[in-house]
Picture (cartoon, rainbow, N blue to C red):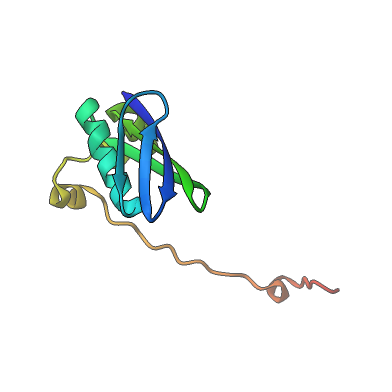
Length: 118
């Protein structure tokens, strides 16, 4: 499992990122593109499983971006059925049981002879 933390800054309309403890980095015109590049950079370093990422602004011109690569941490955050589901989307949809809708019946206070202001 690899954890990659990046400090991101905006200057002159361009976002740049530098790894907190390491030499990795990237730059892009938008935070979206920067995040994509950083995930690809982290996967090139440690491509050993699923990817989880988090982007948090510190102020309008700086942010922290964290990429976690590894199956164990991602599977723990996803529901049990989704973590064990096959890779194919159609197979996962077939494996999930249909949810039953339960009808909620509300009882009124007057049926029981109780009132809020009695």
